Structures are given as C-alpha cells and as structure tokens.
Length: 185
Ligand code: ZN
Image 1 (cartoon, protein in one colour):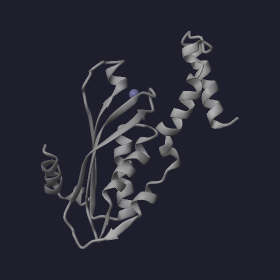
Image 2 (image 1 turned 30 degrees about the vertical axis):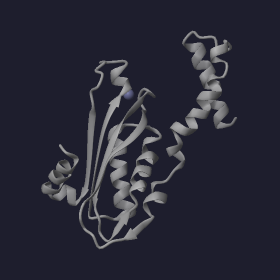
Image 3 (image 1 turned 135 degrees about the vertical axis):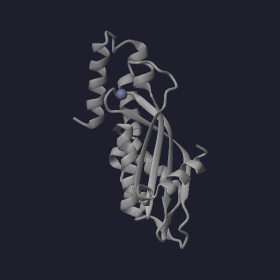
C-alpha cells in the first residue's frame, strides 16, 4: 500500500469514527484531498537543512545578522493541530554568511513535520551551528497553538515563546540583549 493510500484509508475510518458518512457528497473526496495536503504539510520529513545552509559565501563581516518575523506553520505532535507564528534567527558569522532566504527555508524544513515548538527552535539553532559554523546563533519562536485555543484551556491569542542559544550567545549576555533590542523587545 502506498503512503497516500494509507492516509486515504485512515481518513475514511476517521470519518466513520466521528459518526460521519464518508460516502456523502461533501466528504467523498476528502480522503484524497487530505492525502494530497499531507504531502505539503509534512514535506519537511523529506528535506535536509544542510542542502540550504551549506550554500554559504565568504564574508569578513562579524556583525550580528538578524532575520526576523519569518512566518511559519507547523503541526503539534500531541494533537495533530496547527501551531503557527513567527521565527526570529540571528547569528554571528565566522567567515561565512548565507542568503537570507535560506534561513526561511531552514525554518520550513523543521516546521513542516509533526513537531513540538521547543524542538523546532533547537533544531534550527543546531543546523545553523552544524552547517555554517558561526560564532554563535540564537533562535526565537513565538506561536499560537490551536490545541490550546480551540480545545483544552482555550486561551485565544496566547503565545508560546521558545528560545535556543548556541555558541557566543550562551556565553555573552550582552549579545542576547542586543538580539532582543534589534527585535524591538
Ligand atoms: Zn498540542
């Protein structure tokens, strides 16, 4: 059975499980639509951050590079509901910089999977350190979790904030302060 067929069968069973009729007109094509949607929502499973981050070019600049407000969408692995928000990434180059679009692509690689927010944050920071070898990197994610807003404790608008620091950002608090200042916090 192909992966797509597994999803289609599972969705049919799911629809029956919630008391629906998978054959009624509005739902007839839903298993197929969801199977196709999954290849977009979870495409990060087949991607490797190294492909994007290894495309560096040399630079003698050692000033902090910040890319902020990168919109991302992910799916929480506990409830399979979306969480989404903004990623902010900064690094201190050590002879190498990367095109800014590659940072956004790196966020996509880790966000387009079943995830937990803390883990994406750490994975982005680790990928930067591994593939670009900067002097330091810091990653902050701010997101709203549908599993907290449409079910459970129901706190619409509440934001979960996660932070990962690597290298110089772990050692020098003034760099972290500068990151927050540049973010406007
Ligand atoms: Zn959840």
